[in-house]
Every structure is written in C-alpha cells, then in structure tokens.
Image (cartoon, rainbow, N blue to C red):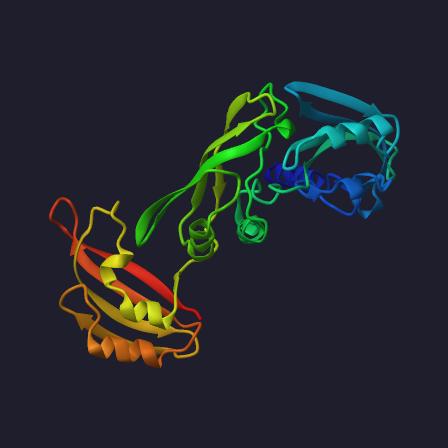
Length: 318
C-alpha cells in the first residue's frame, strides 16, 4: 500500500514538473520586451514543441482601467499591439488563458505569461537578484528618473518628474540626496557606484502640461556591491569612524585590520587603540593591490553598554 502511494505521488510530481511552458520572441515569462519585438510577428510557442497555442488573452492596466483583448491564434492581433504601444515603460502586462493543445494526447491545458515593457526605467523596476547590477548600470548610463506606472487613474506617460530624493543607509553615512528635476546629481551617481546597502528612490513628484501633480511610489534598487569601494588615496585620508553609520547604535572604540583577500592574500591582525589608522596599517594598505578586499573589525559597545563588533569590507579601486 505504501509503495502504491509513493508511486502515485511520484507520478503526480512528474506530471506537475512536465507542465508545458510558453515563450514569446525567444523570451520566457518575467522578461522585458521591446516594441520592436512585439511588432516582429512572433508567435507564442510551447517550449520543447510539446503543443500548439490555439488562443490567448492579453491583459494590461491602461489609464486606470483593465483592458483584456483576445487573439484567436498564437499571434498578437493589431489591437493587442496597440495596447502594448499605449503602455508605459516598465509596466507589466499578461498573456492569460493561453490554451495549449498538447501533441501527446490531444488534450488542452491553460497557462499564463507575464512580461514588462522595455524603456527608461524597465530595468530599475526589476527589483531583485540578477537585475540589481543591471538596474544600477542602467541608471548610471541613463541618469534620469521617469514617470512610471503605479496603476492609479492617471496616465503617467503624460507626466514629467519634477523632483525626487535618493535615500540610503550606507556603512559610512545615512544619505538623503535631492534633485530638483528628473536628472541624477553627481553625488547620486557616486553613491550608486559605491553603495553596499539598498537605495530607495523616493519623494518622486511629477506634473503634466496642465500642472496637475502626482506623487509616485518609491523605487527600491538593490546594492551593486558587497564591499565599500575606496582608492588607496581615499583610504589613507580616511578615519575608521567614517565607516560607521550615524544610524548605528554602536559606539566604536578601536579596530583591527584583519586580512586582505584577492591578489595579495595576506593576514595582518594589526590593531589600533582608537579609530585612527596606524603607520603599520597605512603601510599594509600601500602594499596591497587594486582589487584586494581589506577586512576590518570594529570593536565597540551598543546602547546597552554591551560589547559589540562590526565588520567592514573595503575593496581597493583606482
């Protein structure tokens, strides 16, 4: 009996895993898609040629209303292409009720698919993992914040961002930088390049040609680095206190330079009795190579008077 139950569960698992999936213009669900790809007349294809798409719906929010347009085949209709054209860069849309006729037994199943329209902020709105570095790179290369869809009753394509802030707790400081237009300031770009903690684009205000204003939802950008980036010259002029955020409840007392990882690969265990770099530490830093990550350990006490340590990693850059 137990063996039979295990077999049934195994078959159910295999069937679930073998559920056919769909691709469009060579892209899987969750991808960013351009208008050129949409207009390329590509069909919705069943991966591994397991079946044929017979029909599907395209669903999107436009000007605050849900639009659902159907296709009687595996290709986009002219109306669906026009719906895509009306969407805002970064906006998500869905292929739903995708009816697939399976080749193996002629039966039919339904599935769905999600995509994001390409454009100025499309990468930024991809908030996790593999997209984080791409988002930061995108903003550095295209340093503007555009109005993006928040699924309100406003057509945000008609709005221009008039001001915004970038906020972030970094190991050395709490940053709150403001721009009075839609362009990132040089200080903002420098922060994006060096951030080791997440960054929030907030207080995004925009207005249309009739000066009707709207506030937009915050955008979260994941940190592109896992170490603070500093040149040798910058580090030589720094104090270890610079790497302790004012928001931290640690009262720093002393620190150690433990090791260097990278081209150098050497231990030091040099200790400073205060928060100043010693001569031996400066020599160690000078002898380290560009690309090395220096591991510092800060010793201090928290708000309760208890001993508490904090690790800071600094990567040497040009």
